[in-house]
Image (cartoon, rainbow, N blue to C red):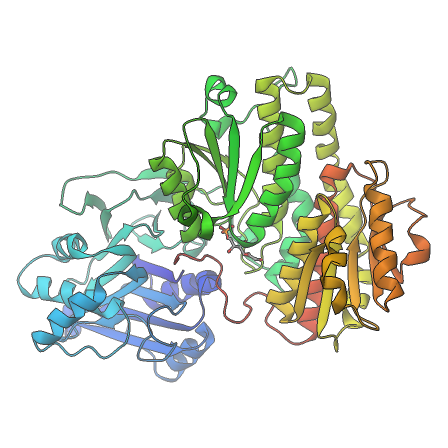
Length: 618
Ligand code: F6R
């Protein structure tokens, strides 16, 4: 989950690379580094600067001690796997002769063996990383007379694991060579200049024309074009695409944090995710779906696999899918899925939810499902990423880039995609009448306005957050579709404010966790709308139980719900929406609460400690 950048063209490579790294810093911020090829006339060498900590540390080093001018360069921002975040372990790494510089994202699984062989041949490896080994191997190849491209191909054939690699050679100043297996890499196509990046944010200020690379490919960029091969040198092709968002989408737009900006973008993100989903005669259509009606009719079970916030979206989806389609749904953490030998066959539809499309646990789970002949449908926000590419079908969420490490608009748009999937399957299988589907679609289409109205009340939530600066523990309670919202609210608080926070199903409290309740403990309660079975009344009983034991109850309840008033120490009003859709509005105050509390505590909201945006290691 490191960020990788490469550049060849007329501009100063250091500037382009540092700008790219700034936009990719959300992928990892343990250290950063840059390497440039200084052309033969001035000596023909590779120069490098790298520094532990955030990119700002590297920028300071470069300001104090600038690198020579160069128009070919690579850069890296690291999320540490092998070896702690130190200057020495920072990328780029070099071979013994300092001729090749290389950056790497992923894990080389056979690095220990390769390292032992290099050391037996008197190579001195200075870092604890798996990546440095690859720099040595590539350098050995170019020293033997191979071009950097062939060197990369040969070395990739020997590597096991997941990797994106980008390298430069001091004696070949006009090209940058990269390779990928199970790890992201996209190419930016400019006028007489080419870019490499872990995602398009790295070069979006220069070009919106891009190429997505396939699995096990090597790419060479120069001023005159790109050349793509497989690991054996056979010609290969990438897929050209146009990036449909621009630079302003990747900037903060006047907000203090990307996360806050992304929370406020949610009405638009939800609206965009609903766009174009209906034909003229009102039927649902999912363009990228790629599953035939017959395949959908054959589905007898669904298994949703995901991690973190995406997993909680999957938990909400279970309620909607089972209710509207009558198909049984299991929801499973991707990291656990394949280790329990799940029962899968051709009639099981596996739904993989991933904002980034690169989460290694989810990727491995879908690969396992496909070996068992199950169809895989991805719900994903990132065009060109690995998970949709390796799935049979995809629903894109159209949230735009999510830069804040904590997922917000990613979650809401995943919920929208799950509702659309459920309704589409209901339409194909005929488990809901068209007018019922139209009614839910109309309710979904009203959601952007409802979310806007919740955002309009943000000051009440901010004030509440600032009252909790000394709080060490917060509980969240929910029932039914509100239970995953409680879990997601707690996750946001843990990851941003570093507080003990736990979400519970309200009915489960009396079976143990109620012992946690003590005088003044804040308990955030997501109160279900009235009218669905006994849910509302049962929730009120749970709230009374914790309040009787001293908890301070902060209740999120729909407009007009007066029954809750006597039991709420603080009442946050939500718009009146159906029970199944309530997560779309109920999560928003919890996101605002976590963002504001973390900010008031002085934490880095966009880059919380120990985390990275896209987790490409298992
Ligand atoms: C929490 C968060 C993570 C991700 C998880 C899965 O705010 O962002 O829990 O949801 O790492 O990531 P994706 O959805 O990219 O697979």
